[in-house]
Image (cartoon, rainbow, N blue to C red; front, side):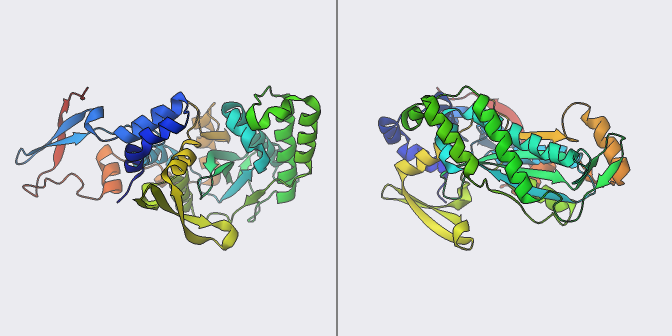
Length: 375
């Protein structure tokens, strides 16, 4: 099986000869390349029955590494299960016009923050309107920057509660279908985003340098106002478990997972992708390794940037008190608050007998001692 690690290990040096990379991109390349190798050190696993020892190499734990997201995802989901309410949830997606892509690339932290602010305020303000809900919903927003073909495509996936908490601390359920008209949602989102876009001090260079001229910038913004901003809502989740399943797929996803990579041959990388413009057909894309790496690195996030954020009922301030009240009002069963041990999480990811001793077949391998990393 060809993995992202294999592609970087073989083609990284050649890529670096021809391309400049940021410090953060270099850090990600090194982490993925060295993941679970002697470079990051190791530890000894010892069988609790026969004493057999095995060296296991440490993982990089970088959030862009496809190998290291499974355990992080399970830990995150465990916390979210404790906050889920026994109600319906909606999935909304907010995208921006592609002529903003270059500005996003050059001002990532500012533009991503702007996207979160515009989306959260749009949903919160419309939900506060009694015409639609008249209450404060719970929102979990997840930033993705890629499309299926690995091109740059910043957008937010939002999980929104089908109801909300009123100022009088009463719970109001929404209609079964999404309770805010999509055209209203899109127009308000566009207005919110462009309001912040006009106010923010941004960097323009290269392809976007013409925007330094105030007249060009004004014309650019006017053109954005005329565009239809694509916002859509998918069918509501059928059950709370489906909300969990969805979150598990989306929250800790990286630009390209190892199971999508099909092959690597003659300096080219092939991977599967879904073409949404052609009936969601699954297709094979073949790219020069150089271009594949370039596309992957476009999706490296700024250091410390939070790509998952919570708003409304799920906001961090007084969250536990608010969630407990909402659980009571919605008669949510406590069965959702399930805590798993580290072993249980690993068994779920890797299989029931993931640490079964290969020698005696009865004992289990447990961490015994660390091994110093190589120079």
